[in-house]
Every structure is written in structure tokens, then in C-alpha cells.
Length: 323
Image (cartoon, rainbow, N blue to C red; front, side, top):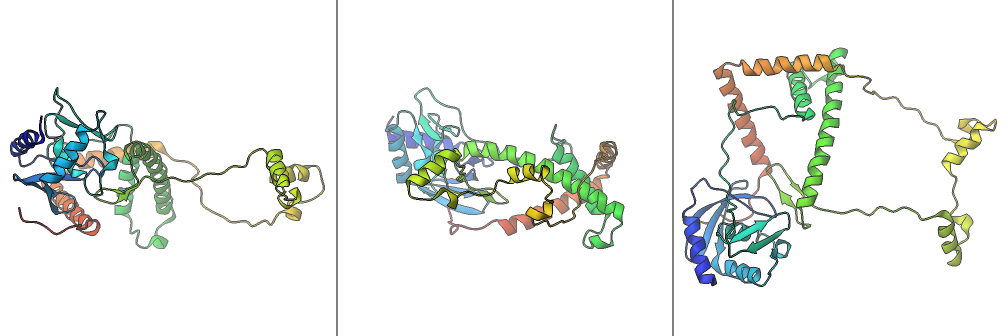
């Protein structure tokens, strides 16, 4: 199929999309809608950063040619910056498909599944369910309850038992959140195929790398250094484990060979899971029995908070264009 024919088919498919239909860019995962379809361009609007952009026909044709020249699919990492809305729009065409796992866009004569996603509806109280097996959810709920019941702006004025509860819950949330964070990080690592930042509503992440070094076998290192003219005595150091072994068979004290500094800290000794579970169930029951007015008020407060967060974290990257 020629580009002209494919372009006309694409415009027809875009015209047929419902106004609420959303597309997602394959690299940065930004959500956007099609706001206008013209013969020379397609106008899109990014929901998460309130930005309107025109996508030009000649750029669609350039990507079309590159896809045709790549039998195994065009590598999306080769796209110029800010160009990943183009493959997302092409994916509306019945013969083009984005493979995020492989980070390619392919063309098939047999037809492909659409990449369009429906607009998300705001969750209602009936839709809200506790995630199964996610400990951080329960502990975070308990922590929120504790924060609401105590004046944490002046922690030094709190009773000791309240501080103990707060410390325990903060510790549990930190542990659970870090485990879940690592799980999310592993999934993201498999999806990020480039070094460009990928943004979400609250921030951005970027694939990066670090170098870890470990010395080779001692004799091999010493031999190579000696061959290079370095006296082995210059790189020999005291082995801490061997010093500890020597202390056990001599009359030397620890302070004879160590600079010892002591510091004190608070450590969580144990957690009463039964009490936590009982309190958590009480919170769930209380939320379930909330009056409709209270629920509406809570929802309004949450929406106001989300708007404030969005104002603080969003930014404009281009001038709004009238379609």
C-alpha cells in the first residue's frame, strides 16, 4: 500500500475515534487525545502537561518510509527527541502496531490490533478495592490514620506511645515501599530502552548505569603491579578480619588497634500485627460506613489536592496551537 493510501486510511481511522479515546506514546508514556484531523497534519493534546502540538504529514511519511525499509520493525530508539507521538498515531492504522517490549513499530498486511486506549473514568468509592498482597497499602493507611490523630507538626510534644506507634508505622511503610519500589524499578528497567527521561504526573525516571569494581586475586594484582615497577608494600593494607583474629589470641584490647566511637539509635524491636490488623479493619469499616456527604467532601478534598500537585509538577514545553 502506498503512503498516500495509508495516510488516507489513517485519517479515516482517526476521524472515527471517539473524543474520549486516548493514545500513549511508546517511549515516554505520555497520554494524549486527537483534537483535529487535517489533510496536512494531525493536532494532538497532551493530557498530563496541557500542551497542544501539530504532527505534520511529511513527518508521518518519513516514519512510514523507515518502517517499510525495516522488515523486522523500525527501532523506536532511533526516533528524534519528542517524536514518539508519531508511532502512537500510526498504530491507529489497522496495519501498524507498536511492540513496546521490542521497542519497535511494525507493519503487517494481515492487520493488527488497535493501540487506542479508552479514557480513564474517575474511580468511585464502589470501584476502590484494596490491592491483594500489597503490604504497603495497609501500612500506609494505618500511618495516614496516625498522622491525622496526632499533631505531628510538633513531634516533641507527643506522648511516648504515640511516637512509638509513628516510628513503627514509618519503619514498616519504608520497608514495604522499598520492596515495592524495587519491583517497579525492575519492570521499568525492562521498558526503558534509551537514556532519555520518561515523565509521569509526579516526576520522571531515566535509565542509567553504574560501574562496580572489585579487585582480582591478590597475587595476580601484586604481580602485575610489581611488573609495572610498583613495590608491593605500597599497596598492602591491614586486613580487618585478620586483625580481629589476632585480637582473640593476644592480650591487646580493641581500643589498642581501633578508633572506637559509640552512638545510640532507635531500632524497631517488634510489631504487634494483631493490633495493626484490628485497627486496619476498623478503618476499613469506618470508610465503608461513611455518610455520602462525608464521602463527597473527602473526594472534593482529594481532587483539590491532586490539582495542587498537578500545578506544582506540570510544565509547558511548547506554545498552544489553535486547531
